[in-house]
Image: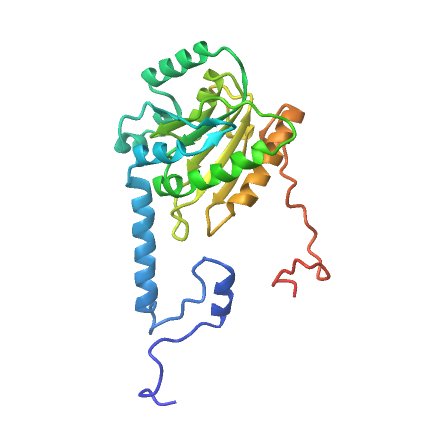
Length: 276
């Protein structure tokens, strides 16, 4: 083939695998570099990831949407609280401050707990984390699915007041769950954005929450979003963990998620392209 007829962009034989993953594979090349279109897509993904970290959570919009949900016959009215990180810059520079409640928020939860001395099974804690877009886009539709599934459970689950935490990290849920006298803390948090997933929601479950616990005491379900783990599937996995945590009286490394123990078998109706 003459140089005049040679295509500008050389394709990649691995490009057929791109339909199975959002990972950047089989991008082709233009000379010794990437095609312009792929370079522009990368720059857009990088900008979206940065925006997810720095864009503040629209708390008013989120609380208004949450108020449209209900627990039984009661509307869900969240309490908005704050970590010790006063602003986003401090939050990113001082992770430790994002793990503890501001004194004013701590006092509010203590007063709330004293007003209702009954213990609850589960405290739902919504945390902006490292991706406000994940929380803004995914928390409400996930909770809509989860609360419906929870209500259909044979045993009634008593919920603590729902909280929305600004400038928070995962571990702040332990302090909140302890203050609300909840048997388990359920943290919905914006995960650190990747270049193909700026809107990934993480779910963390802790049995017997209290300040000072380590990650070994938590179970995690990650990548909850329309392009990742579907809300219905995430809800069923979470319900399994809640039931098992309640039965075994523990969470974390001692509690295994066995919802996906499937043997790869070519004769199975669930085919895997790697084994076809």
